[in-house]
Every structure is written in C-alpha cells, then in structure tokens.
Image 1: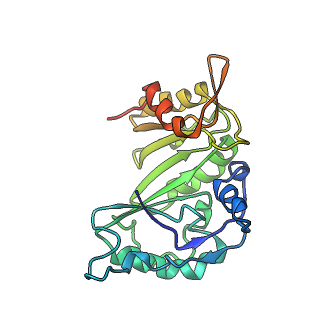
Image 2: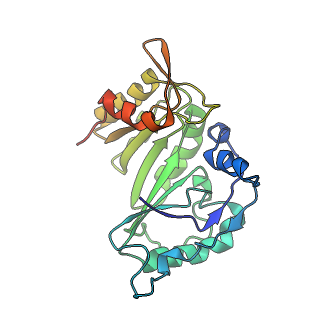
Length: 238
C-alpha cells in the first residue's frame, strides 16, 4: 500500500474523531497532533529516484492524506499544488477519505469538471447524524468515483436514500485502540443488507477492538481485526 501524506495533523470535528489514530501515534512521540504542518513528502508524487523513475510506481493506488484531512482549512493553499500533482500523475489512482466533504469545493481546480478519473473520494459517516449532514452534500458534488466509509461505526445507520448508482462501494468497520468504542455486528449487517438491496458493493473492513455479536462482547487484538471481519463472510460483491 503506497501512502502520500502531504501534510500532517488534524483537528477533531465529530464523534468519529474521538479516538483518532493520528492523535494516538503522535502522543507516543510527544507531538501535538492538532498542529497542521506540511511534510517532507509534500511533493512525493513527482519525486524521482536516482535512476529517473518515479518513487510512486505507475498503476498504484495512493492512500492520500491519511495522517490529516485533505480538506482542512489550514491546507487550503497547499491543496492547490496537491491537486496539480494529482492531475499530473494520471498514471496513479488517488484515494482520499474525508470528514470535511462540505469543504470539497474550496480551491477545487478550474478544470475539475465532473471529476478527475484518477481520484476516488470517500465521505465518512460514523453515525446517523453525520450521514444526514455529509451524504446529501456528497451526492450533489461533481466527483467521478464516490465511496461511503462507515468507520468507526458507532451506531445503526440508515443509508438507503443515499445509495444511488453514483456510489461505487460502501465500507464499514469498528474502532481500534485501547479506548475503542463498541461496534455491533447487527449495525454492520444492517448496512450490508441495504447495500445488497440497492446492488451497491459492500466491504466489512475490520471488527474493531471491541466487537459485539449475538449479545457477546469480544476483545479482538489489532492484528486479528481484519481477519475476523473477513471470516464473517458478509462482503457483498457484484
């Protein structure tokens, strides 16, 4: 998995941010995760090795800005150059997941049109409140590739009215970390049912650290959370 974190640090804005993994990691190194700074990897997409090849190999999917949020206010000016690099590297596919979909159009490139073909945008919604706020905005935006991320899943969510053909995938998962909140299998399966009825692909990514199924609480180690989700066998593929 290739990553590109052009800037680092974020500010918490909703319930899903409570136990943010960026804050957990930065705390270990006595860093302030709320301080937003440009990183040394800022221009990674256009960097080359000594032999002249790009450091990011053509054809890769690039997990973009996973140590921050691509649409942070503090990054508005930086994002102008970031979009230029994304357009230039049309041989890469950039995956951007955000809790700030309402800021998507700030400093959007003038040639964006209905979206760059090499960009997938994922809007998160950890609970019904955030789904109600973010997804109506998300569906109206000119984005070529759209996915919905229900992670960390904090409660039962009704997504039916937003599961339109423009949504390419829905992903759900629990919360990791020592302070993780419960994720209930029933909530995950409820989303899976909605996706199957609407013929939208669904992926159960991870159980989280505290997972409830059939009324029983399971404490699951970090290295097993993806595996246990896969064992549930509830992904829906077209």
